[in-house]
Length: 106
Image 1 (tube, one colour):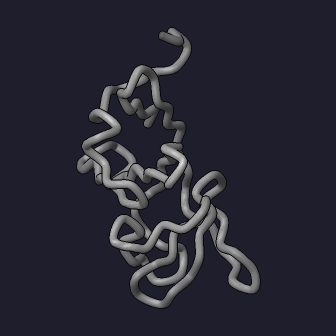
Image 2 (tube, one colour; image 1 turned 45 degrees about the vertical axis):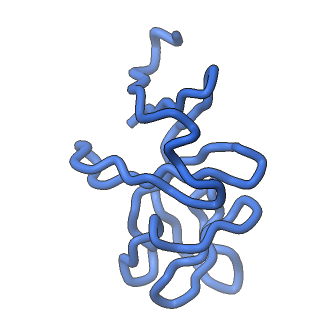
């Protein structure tokens, strides 16, 4: 494990649906959504859309973006940036997959 970063075990990859998410609640940064792509990549974002605070964890994952369920803003999973023409950002967090286990640095 990387000692310079405080990695926390979240769950196994199988516990996150393909093209779905899982929420880590109560971190010092608020709720964090962990997303799984169709290629089994994992990404972590603050679970609030930069537009109106919608729960990104309830959005639709496609490629490396998630669409907010409230107003259909598309947010890049790797950066947290809204896709143009929308403007804004939600905080991304480091997430990784090792031996089928999802880890988060928050």
